[in-house]
Amino acid sequence: MVTDSMTPQDALAALMITVSASDGEMRTSELIKINSTINNLPIFSDYDADRLPRVTSMVMDLLDQDDGLEALFGLIRDTLPERLFETAYALSCDVAAADGKIGATEGRMLEEIRDELELDRLHAAAIERGSRARHMTL
Image (cartoon, rainbow, N blue to C red; front, side, top):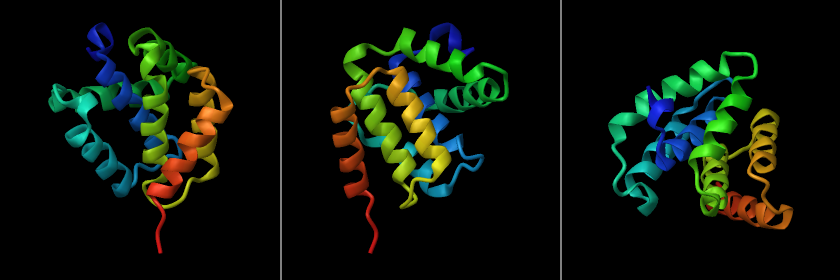
């Protein structure tokens, strides 16, 4: 199972999946964003994308459990180097903004991620602003 040997890339993917699933609907635009991120960003250059279905299954299983989100955040903190916490938040914001709007549920999930990763509020605001700017529509 992924939890036995979770990689930092798995942790990043898990957070993106968590944000997408947080409002009860994984939209096509969000899934495309996740796949595009995994296929194009240097942090995923050596990632085995075949792990993604297992990571997704693990996230969904945890989200269905009482205290599952806390368990997921514990795995993320244990696996992800602190120097990648801002990267994790940026990727999470990009997934949330992928459909052109961030709903209340996604916003609360981003807030939880920000708190769990103990990101500086000013840095988080800059990340959020950049994500919003990249995903504007006409």
